[in-house]
Length: 319
Image 1 (spheres, rainbow, N blue to C red):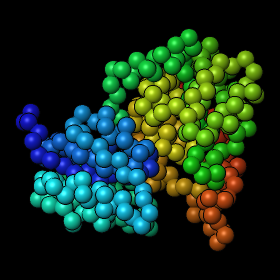
Image 2: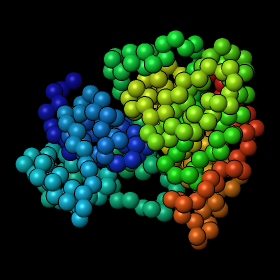
Image 3: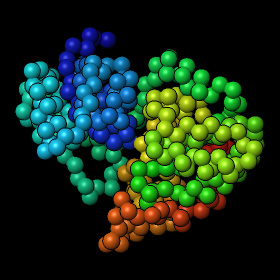
């Protein structure tokens, strides 16, 4: 392999799921152009991108008033002549820095194409490359430490999401967990509950209702240790969220629960991934002119426990 002497400026995303879905593109760009990357992203993507072997530097973008963050970013990158610039956000700095080649994602908000397929338009190999997370040996050791004292197999649930409309009811996760943990597939195993910081309460509620089932509540754990835990887990079931994409990219068999978001666009991608959604389409669920994703309650109530459980056992039989 040639030395990677070219410089790639990769302007990535802010949301965790979007960062994860772009990792395959980043890898292909660095390989094709024999480049090392400087990555610009939000705080949630910092650990994801920094683990990539050919990342030279990560610049974390923190939003400021009057969009001053773009000015401060420009000052950090203007002194370099980039061999390749790839911009996933069509940012204002794209044409204010020197670059031999510019690759810019022009977003079509009306598309029903999966995000990874959309990124394939920028891929020099013209292919859909599956997202991937790179973990170091010490990351995996941390995952082992977190699971120390608990018996496999491990079943992971994520009962939270970044807006309430996407959240399957907590009582459904509770009953589903009982049914799966009492099956032969997880006999003697452990249930793991994950989620983001500030979502700890739902985990505590579920724990109080599951009796003698062995449980680890890891809600609020940082992204990389969470990914390491996923790597030792047999099954993940959760709402449409960044952690769903994290589990799929690690290779954990993953089932994503969908309602108001479109699984054609956001489905988890990996070797063993499935989706199950409400009987209603995302368009039907959000057709109310007064719908507001910040204030709406759960729109996932029509998705039955039986439907999710049936798919879970279907996946487990195939493993």
